[in-house]
Image (cartoon, rainbow, N blue to C red):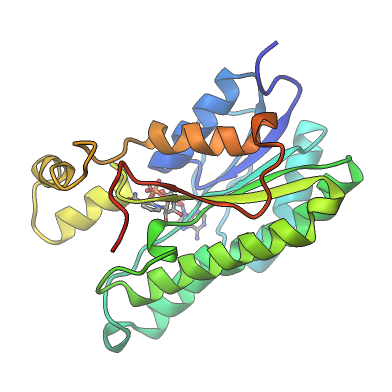
Length: 244
Ligand code: NAD
């Protein structure tokens, strides 16, 4: 028996850095996993549910589609996210719609649809990928920080409101993670990503920025029975470097 044998999970952002690690590690521990992302063709999984999270009908339908494909649903990981840079005065309508749509509205829609399915089965777990910037904002990413704060608050509210149904809803709040999201940001600003990641690592008390598996391990813990008394928690994973 492994930690997740017999369990079924839905993971969004499954093609990304953290999402791919979550999928791989859940499956290695016995879960069957339905993967959601714009393109899921390269991912080893038990069900493929590609689509655009900005499409409300797609997000509304994902939990039922995962439950139908896997025969049950126990775990939902709202991990997909987008980052837009800039102060409010530099934020376009398109940046706003994208950030709010993917980072807030999609987890809201997916959770709203998943909760009755999990409740009918006697309970389950939802894990959201927020950010340490949702707890304390950093500079020049106003709307990104706001969306992650909204997701953190939604997690705390849902964690309270649905605990009595046996549904535990928590969030992981990473600081910098070595994924395409971070690396493409460096490339856009003209930096070599390997050098930039190494330099950034020197600012972390633990001596390096996180790898996706460092975050996925905490997501799996929150999804597991070991976190059975955790509801509405925001778990910071930062190598000793909180945002000031
Ligand atoms: P990533 O860019 O590697 O992965 C994000 C995934 O989300 C991508 O595969 C992308 O295709 C998917 N996605 C984005 N918009 C979508 C849409 N409209 N429809 C469907 N899928 C969509 O980034 P990552 O670093 O793995 O990020 C995962 C989560 O971790 C995000 O919520 C991010 O905000 C959060 N996070 C990342 C960091 C970091 O430093 N990398 C830090 C804190 C929090």
